[in-house]
Image 1 (cartoon, rainbow, N blue to C red):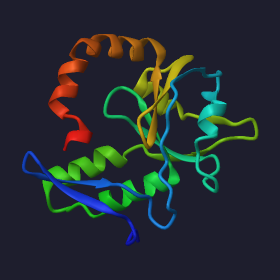
Image 2 (image 1 turned 135 degrees about the vertical axis):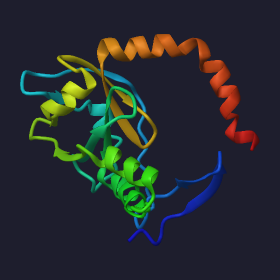
Image 3 (image 1 turned 180 degrees about the vertical axis):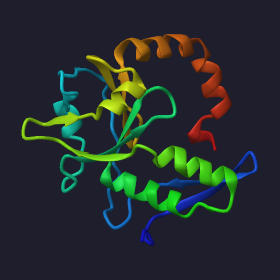
Image 4 (image 1 turned 90 degrees about the vertical axis):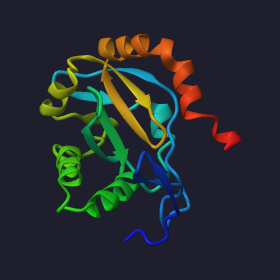
Amino acid sequence: MWENSIKNNVRSRGKMCYFVSKIPNSGIMTSFFGESEVSLDVRGRFLLPAHIRKQIPEGLGGRFVINRGFEKCITIYTLDVWGVIHDWISRLNDFDDEERLFKRLFLNGAAEVETDTADRLLIPKAMMEYAGITKEAVLTPQGNKLELWDKVTYYEHIKQNAPSFSQLAKKIGNPFQR
């Protein structure tokens, strides 16, 4: 399905990792920047900020896949990025306990959503409950995806992890020196 994608294999702690560096057949790579505070209405909708809408590659429109994040947040993928991730997950070995569990936990709850005519995204109640989002939230870019966090939880997470940021950067390394 994604035969034209460029993949780099890297050994990391005994596991094979794949880094997709190009979206297949499109020549584009979705990449987001610009954190925003957003408010959700009583139905669970929030306005997708204009600067984020401008960063969505032409032809992808307002359709996304949302999923539970690894932390207590909601992850939002454009359909092109989700296609690459889903393709990789679909190839995991169902006969391996860890891979099957990862597939189950990762795909559980994923849903396709689309912006309405007012450029709002509707977040299902179960997802809002998972992330603890009630009204005020932060939409934060994470490269090729977005995360939606409860505002208080997000700023606590950043504050708690900020002191270790320098050490984390040192541990992960400088990509320009590799």
